[in-house]
Amino acid sequence: MIVQIQKMKFFRWHDAGDVQSKEHMNKILEVARRTPNTQHWLPTQERPYLPAPEDVPDNMVIRLSAAKIDGSFGKAWSHGSSVVTDGTETCPSGKQGNQCLDCRACWNKDVVNVSYGKH
Image 1 (cartoon, one colour):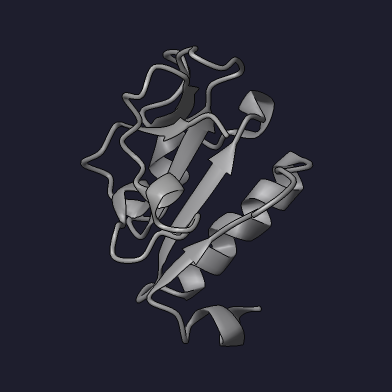
Image 2 (image 1 turned 30 degrees about the vertical axis):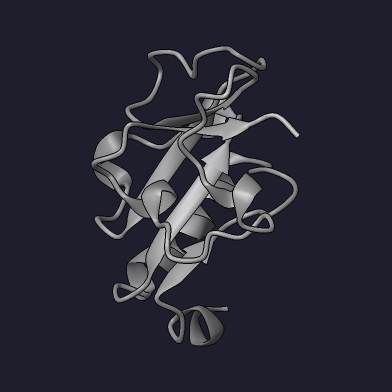
């Protein structure tokens, strides 16, 4: 996995599915550490498996997903994502054929929350 990921500038974990255990999370963190030239984005709803903030490599953003549509991701984590129905989404993919194209907000630690339009 490391050999394949190190060829990429950006990598998103789990297009479908989620972290299954603390061991799973630790393996993801290790892959990120071993691919320092790749920016990693990990969306998750699995609060019990969040690592200590200091254990997250600099090249990784973990985004805690809001549990409900039009809800907040809460205060359990520094970065999050949400789904909105009011047209205030910050993610442009819904207007770009469901592709990121040149947007990299999800990988950007300066962006606290990324909101996606409900589809």
